[in-house]
Length: 141
Ligand code: THU
Image 1 (cartoon, rainbow, N blue to C red):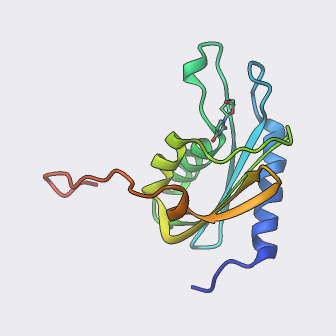
Image 2 (image 1 turned 90 degrees about the vertical axis):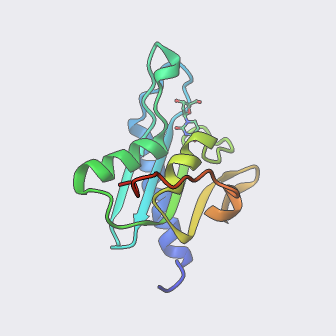
Image 3 (image 1 turned 60 degrees about the vertical axis):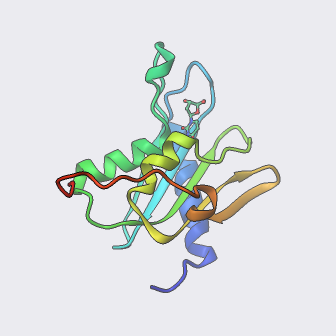
């Protein structure tokens, strides 16, 4: 597949910023959005949803992923992930989201996130090296 062009990544980033407006974040007031671009060209977005029992909070990236799988299964893989927030702060995906996303990304997937001096794009492999994996006895899935 052809590499993802800059205009596509920019549109994905805008979609992430747009969905961040729906974030339910009354505790942290940190409003995050994520947009996932799948191999079949579809884009699925999600925002963070907090809870007064803070540990039950669910990040934007995982909400986008779970929304996509719930809607049409885990067929197409993710080619690109964009993360944005409405606070103007640096926010690479957290470690838990990297682990969960790692099971659904293509080998050459890229991640665009707010860095210290503007949007940064890295390969998923670069931000999540040495991922945990395991071969279930019965073959899994
Ligand atoms: N958050 C995300 O949505 N994604 C991340 O990768 C890191 C953190 C959310 C969780 C919480 O609602 C708020 O940001 C502050 O941690």
